[in-house]
Image (cartoon, rainbow, N blue to C red; front, top):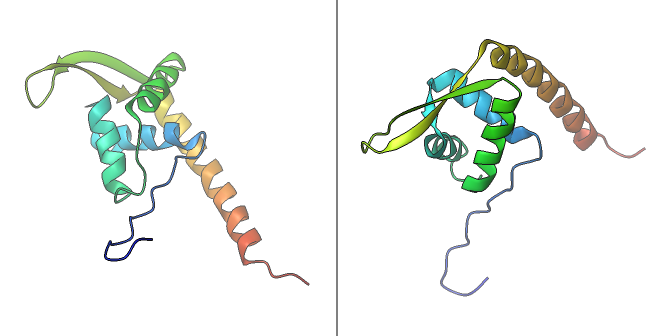
Length: 119
């Protein structure tokens, strides 16, 4: 660290598989959004700890659409530009419930492992 400079806030990469879950949750909570809006919302909620590459977000959106968990339609963005908006589907909501339960179970296991002391 150089003298006189504030330490940079650490930014984290998204764990594999968690981006899909965060996108589904964002769409469930916010309603239809375009890709840029989804990315900015997740970054905002992470307090900028997560820095999302737009290519990664669009790859995830494509994968979610192919699974039938989100749908897309063209519309106008806030600045009146043509944008593709994504919305969660019924099967996407079911997947969100399943993935949330799975994530909570895994997070609990990781928490227990990190809390364990050696004997």
